[in-house]
Length: 67
Picture 1 (tube, rainbow, N blue to C red):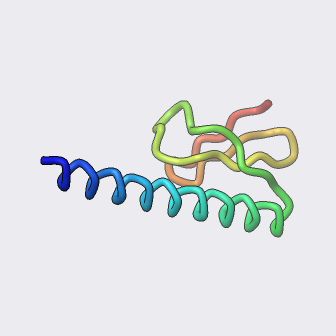
Picture 2 (cartoon, rainbow, N blue to C red):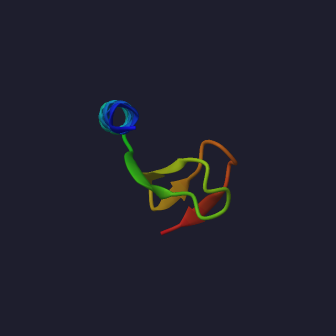
């Protein structure tokens, strides 16, 4: 049982590390194209939003809201 818990902890740590790398990469790409990474989409909750020119845009569902 202890070995299984340790294995799960290692997998979780790896997944969290990969998530941090991806978020940093996406934020960098957003900056490259002139926008910033916003919050989680309040409509579909399936993506972070991009913020540009006074609005937030969800690339997953297409929702756009003014700031």
